[in-house]
Image (tube, rainbow, N blue to C red; front, side, top):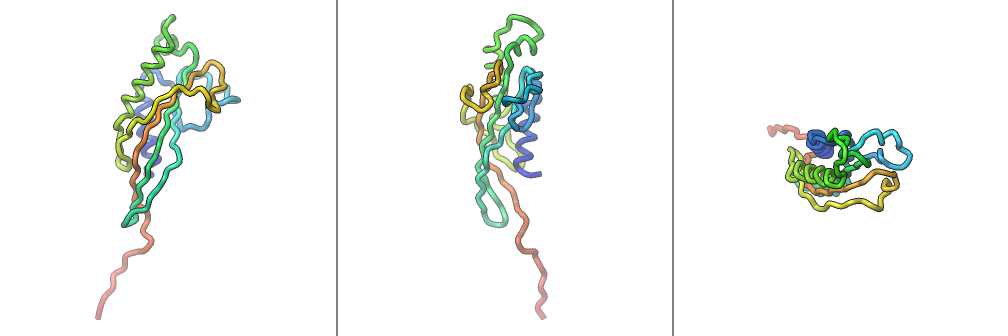
Length: 162
């Protein structure tokens, strides 16, 4: 399994386990303008792995610095929807979801990546998807380091000396 795939699956498992998040997937601009099908979800998290900077090490090993963004999308009225009541504050429920996401992902590590470390948290106002009416976007940014072993350029061969 590649480091990128392992990271995505580990993050997706942690986010899926959070009560109140209905949809978790790889970021492909699902909540952007023109994608009205996704507004059926009151809450969603999209996982975006930013460009990875690889460095080659000795013995076919590679190391990379990677940044991952988690975008939390919440639709107006989601607090009432996830709690089954009326009159709840979307703002407080949104803060609770952000805190749960941060707690689940901080220091998450795998076989091919080091522990995630949170770098930033922000409410996204100017974004290509921010134009969707009634949807709030919060972005959490984490960093990690990947390690992988690549295929050897040369195949070992035995030689005999006579």
